[in-house]
Length: 199
Image (tube, rainbow, N blue to C red; front, side, top):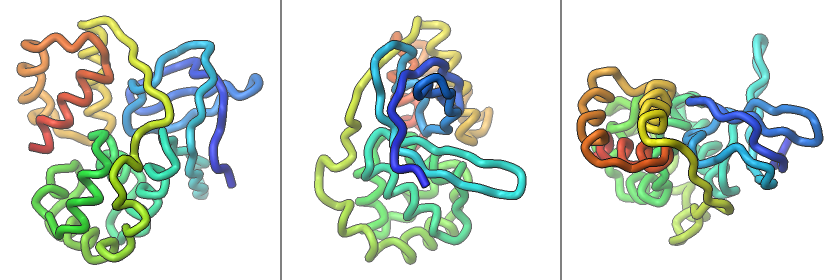
């Protein structure tokens, strides 16, 4: 129904942002909420809407190509919206496309909710359907923003990892490394954590 929404970010939580569009607040679930910041600046978020018996949910993306990759992942048997968001959260969508194109099942199993069987299904279903997404540079977000204070930023990043489905023991494993290297923004902490978790 919607292609994108444009408005101001008025709230950021570990699993979602609230976008004010002409006085209407849209709750939008995103892979990395901390790439946004609360401000008066206008932000465009591409959206995918799902409707079930119990809920209507909006999922948001920084670029049209990221949205298209999410929709391709959703079409794979065994991949739900939460798993698809977790796969996209590492911020390196090109690496995901490359892994699928080169049958790199091991890389795909590093994401929460993706076992070997599901990873194989992703490769099987999408290997020949990503030609429109294999060009370098397609996944660069159309806006870049940062926010946060060091301790609160780290806490928010760890909460975001939980919201994405990572296990407590895995989060604790990377927390020590993150504390030793002060990133100052939640987005930077989250990006660093996701790189560590997908090594």
